Amino acid sequence: MSDSPAPSSNSDPGSISAVDQTGGRSRRSTDGSQTLLSESRHWRDVFWLGIFVIHLIGLGFLLSVLGLNRFKKTDRFNISRYTNQKVETKGELTEDYWPIYAVAGGVGALLGWMWLLLLGSPANQMLKISVHILTTYLAVISVLCFWCDQFFWGVAFATAAALQFLYVISVIDRLSFTMLVLQKAVKMVWSLPEVKRVAYVFMAVMLLWMGIWSFGTAGVVASDMDDGGRWWLLLVLSVSLFWTGAVLCNTVHVIVSGMVFLVLIHDGRDSVSMPHNPLVKSLRYAVTTSLGSICYGSLFTAAIRTLRWEIRGIRSKIGNNECLLCCVDFLFHLVETLVRFFNKYAYVQIAVYGKGFNRSARDAWELFQSTGVEALVAYDCSGAVLLMGTIVGGLITGTCAGAWTYTKWHDRVVMVGSTAMLMGMVLVGLAMVVVESAVTSIYICYAEDPLLIHRWDAEFFNQMSETLHQRLQYRSARAREVLTNNRFDSHTQESLSV
Image (cartoon, rainbow, N blue to C red; front, top):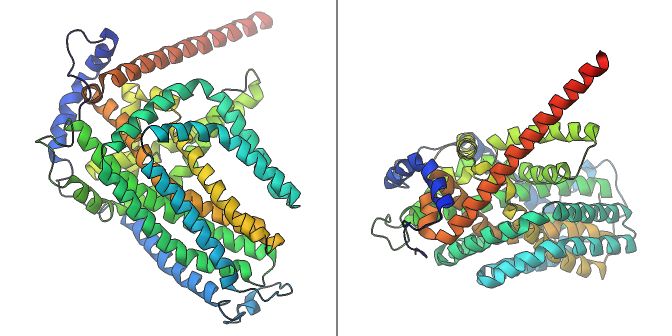
């Protein structure tokens, strides 16, 4: 599937020099590919797999009880006697709210399936639109919340809109390179139709679990508990859904990463050296020996990534406020330390080598730092852009569910809308993850052996190498500037003391 000829003598000198600097890694990755996905695997992070399975079984039982308690009959199991406070019951039942969640699931699945169907040029346009539309959508939701006398949620969405606007402004200069990377990742996924079918299957599995989850959630919303009790219980259920959705998303991540890595390292899916049934083997490892590592990483990775994006955006706009800069720098270094142990690039290492999660994350990060590719990864905002698309999908789903709820129960709009929004985000995220997996695999391959990217797309390789060179120069200039300022401050303090 190579789109360009092999490196020749008239290739760009700056690009080839970047390859020469990492030539020692070329042989290692090429040799290692021979055992890729065929070596014996060991079960990793089994403890977290056990926790996840127990959590699913326990939560499934709890959801069934909560849903059945108000299904066809109010307070079937007399659960109200266990609550500290009760409000006047309205006689609402689980089946009053369950159809609304069914619509939310349908809308979320439709958006996810449409995204997968439109992979290609339309997908790139959709991503560009999502970057700019998210701020507006959040602001509109904020106005609607104020109109519905939901002051807290109005402020929350207004704050989110402001933060989103500030973030986009802080990374506006990076978006051209980000869109280039996403365009190439979409191109890679477009050439692998089987990974899209995997995403469809996992979305169907997620919909089945959401049927159970929404049944219990509808029972909670219809219950006669006070609003505080409902919100706490819904928060617990939402965290569970987020973890379950993250596990399924990252399972797809591992499967797709393994496929993309194989395609790049063997110069195309039709190559003679390509292993037999790579998708089946990757799928089997992802749902067996590597599933514990996926469950473990899914707990923390998304939250740490989001926090890192926000801190980077704030840090770049602080200016000369030394007190605030000191506080943000402390948080920045703390998050950077956590990123060593929880990053999305670990899933590529899990897919390829079958390592445990922490070791995979640490190895991936050390690989990036030892080669300088970490500067390129930090400059790229593809993960944030894909998250924006996921949030837009969730907001559309939540708006549809909230609008239907508003026609019947004005006081349940935010409660139903927010949980429906989470459902939509999980389903759309399952579609988005196929592109994110391609992005992470491209960076890992570029760090392991830049020639893999050069053989696949020489023009893209040259653009990546040029951007990396610019980022390394920028970092060196910043380091010299900080060192000069520190020396000047020290000299000034010595002069004043004299």
